[in-house]
Structure formats: C-alpha cells, structure tokens
Length: 101
Image 1 (cartoon, rainbow, N blue to C red):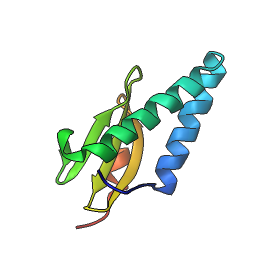
Image 2 (cartoon, rainbow, N blue to C red):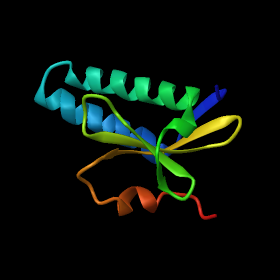
Image 3 (tube, rainbow, N blue to C red):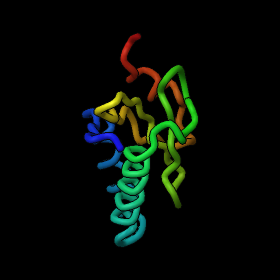
C-alpha cells in the first residue's frame, strides 16, 4: 500500500464542484459522492496497478455510483490525483493537467 495520496489543487476543486452540484440537486447526494470518491482513492492507494492506463503511465479509476473517474499517477511512496473528471467531459481537460515527462 502506498503511504500518501495527494490531490492537486485542480482535483480538489473538481471534487468540491461536483459535491456542490450534487447537493444542489438532491439533499445529501453530494455527501454520497464525496464518500464514493474517497472509497475510490483508498482503492487506488491499496492497488494502483489494478486500474487501467489512461495515457502513458497515468491511470483512471471509476467512482462507484457516479459518472466520474479519478485520474492519477503514482510512485512507490505517493499517489497524485490530477483530476476527478466527469466522463462526459472532453478528456483534454484532464490531459492538460498532467506533468510533462
């Protein structure tokens, strides 16, 4: 298991905006979204290689019950979350956030 999960500023904003959007539509639904996203990140932390590659070494994991994916990279000691991405959005949105190799 990897010790640390770090969200970029953009990923933190993604999660906050998605939670607010769901809360505005249905009471407590944003809380459920947040819980599922956190479960997804814990699964990534435990076994990052189990998730498919999205681009190069960057991988993606689906958020259960919601049309979102967590876009991430990892090393031996840290998972970096680059985006929490609605699957209907243009993928260029998260690709622009990736570090240059």
